[in-house]
Image (tube, rainbow over all chains, first blue to last red; front, side, top):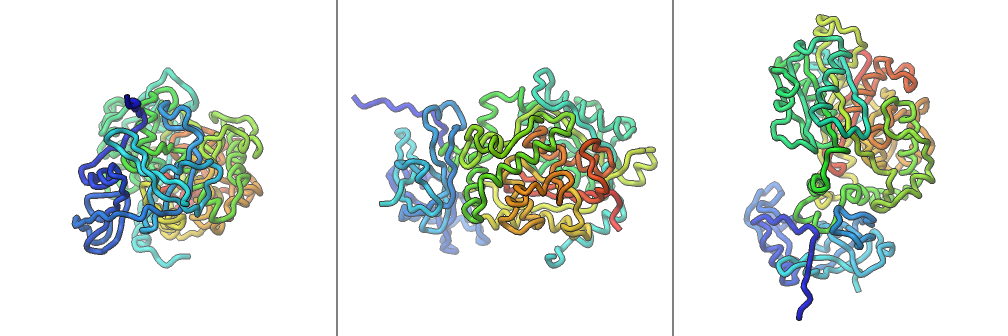
Length: 140
Length: 403
């Protein structure tokens, strides 16, 4: 019998316009929104390009999944009791190869071995049957 | 100095003509005060400010409030007007996090200059320490970050500031000791402030060895949470005379705002933060016709030690990356180059946004700061930041009106 998953931590507050992102993640693909008018990626996903173009003509592009740690914070306290046992964990801003930043966790590494500029690659954490959180680990 | 910022000449004329002043201030007890509600603190602070000005409650015809983290209402100003028993001609709630208190003064000034009111009560108070539930605290943390793309990764509020601090240490080779020095100076000043919560001496070693919250930040890099209220009364020099106000007056010399980002995810680099702080400050400076060398006292938003360094540098008091050594050399202490947060700030006095920063700047300019008094203080800057160093507001206050 499969192990029953219990996940008590906050799940994303979904908005209708971000569906492709989370569907991508569920299928273990990091997809990023890009304005078709300007060809520019943006993150976080929105219904409208935050550029001067104000375009709703958005395409979703599979990203390389590669990036670098831009900054990080080793959390010794989580935001709630649901994080009991997790600290220390790393919350980082990852500068993706596509030029945008995203927040994530850097996992599979001693938190104190993380550094600014570290090469990382995406991994997928299926936290529930419905939700997958893209996370990062040191690049091979 | 940067080239002329559009609007500053006009703003200067408005402030010169109206001579906007802070004419009364009030602070309640600060600390863990479990038997008083948010609206109770607001009422007490308001009464204290009205009494300090020596005017009647009915002389007040304008009201600017903020928000409560405990009692949620989407019409905060009028909810308080009802509770306190007043019928203001002008009312507004400012909700820009830590940039709020500073901008309440600007909001009051703009209302007065446009004829909406003559005597505006600006008040903020909350029972954040005693009244907030654990779910309320979680909701607050969630509000400080993106609910969909940041919060699921376990980011906390100190964690957000730790992200900025870590990058600052990386970019400028700053040290942990330099950050800690900010907390040490705030504690020294708090020892001189009657209602400060934390007065025990603190060393750099104490800060560094305190409980780690989110590396590189420890417990004493983080501001305190408190219950309390504070208020100030904004009017004009003429109206203050008409009402027979005997207090020294703190004149509003300039004001400005600067915006960087809301979520850390959209922050391109630290320069984006510096630029927002600088825009905010320069607008105030150019309106006042003053520069950093004219400032005697600085009230910088110190929700975390890192913000003080970013603001010192962004406002132009020291070059980028040099705020840390300035702090470590004790140059922010009373009696030194640039006294910063002579009341102990959010790190050691109490946390009510920048309300106490505005109150203390006013007391100093009046010469009423008691054991903390900085002699000959003529110009003070007050800078607030909301979000994670994201939304900025600045005012300049002076002992004399704009000339």
